[in-house]
Length: 261
Image 1 (cartoon, rainbow, N blue to C red):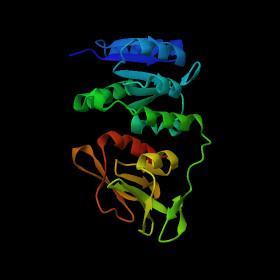
Image 2: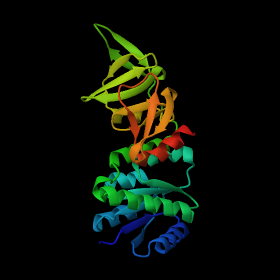
Image 3: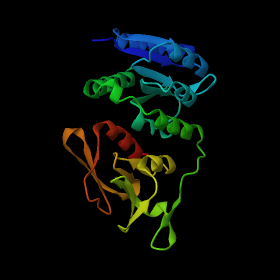
Image 4: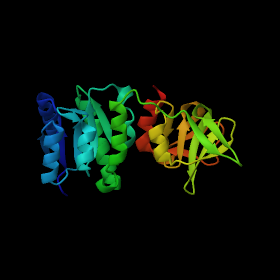
């Protein structure tokens, strides 16, 4: 079995050394490298070396924010973010990255993040779980721009007329046969000319959560959450959805954090 290769990108030298020491103690068989804590230095290293299996990536680097590094390198690695931001600012990361670690990093949380990485790679393989660079870029940009304005309404084409649909009136969105539908609190359906991926970028993440590939749910529509098989959960909404809305085990922690905010 090949050794796991890990890279630490951290702008604070003492923090980088401490994380290296902690990782070496927890996983002595890993090959761990500490890269320069700058966008420029890390990009240069990635251009000259094979991408590691996992990156411990600080959000704020010495010469910029880490989305610049992701944009320039398009890393094939899985990512665990290390950050001093509070949970409100970074909770969206849990949807698309493996995990996040708040500074100062403690041994217990680091162990949990490593074990999560190992469970996911054992089940699916690293290639299938490398985070989407575009999704990560959008999330990072949102964090770096906390005053971002989110969509509040849609212009809908009806029978020989146009009308507006307010976001606050929508209970959830779902996708079927490559068509996106918005379902209002009254149960009326409207066709939206945007994918769920685009909607996830444009809607307030405090209100809407991407439960799975098919559905995007408002917190106000959730009525009950029930356990399901294989560690999944089922989300019951009002008005009822015609199918089960399931959330994978990997997304449950992110959803609980979202619901508990």
